Image (cartoon, rainbow, N blue to C red; front, side, top):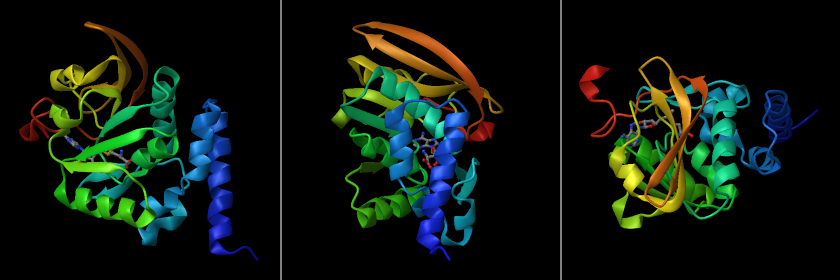
Length: 220
Ligand code: SAM
């Protein structure tokens, strides 16, 4: 009989096979998904769900994103910017930040919900991950650490936050979902000096980016 750890590893391999069938092809991304144990970012009571392709509640009305969504966004980033400093907005469970860390980026992540920031920060420490976390409104970015080579917003934005554009390195790129409260289009903004080029991709559905340059709390 297989031990629980072996079963979870088997489920992780199955998840990666599923991502391949869904079209995720970048070897670096697939290897990162094999390496990071997603179940460690889950509530112990829900471990059996950890390798399903689902978004699940993590408390405080927030979710851990679906593996396919995380893989899709990570691929868009890796293909355009494969190293350097990355700022993630929306730490949540910490899974996306851990994937970026394993890919070799220097990771900075921001979360507005204090309890999630504290819980996930403690998890990073326990797992020995050197990920810099900050609690606050990520729509305004992390000025002291700018510029960033890459940025990833893991919450739905009404439009690209100006403050974040300003904190992008001159050849940096930002991956973010833009749209309304129901659905958003995955968008990549690439900077070249003072010019910004926009590419749009598939539709997704995220919890809202709340903040000064996101949605106002009163809208939701
Ligand atoms: N990346 C996360 C993961 O791997 O679990 C999933 C992120 S969850 C879909 C979106 C997160 O964005 C929530 O935790 C939410 O509290 C956070 N968020 C929303 N608006 C924010 C803001 N202005 N600044 C920082 N975090 C924000």
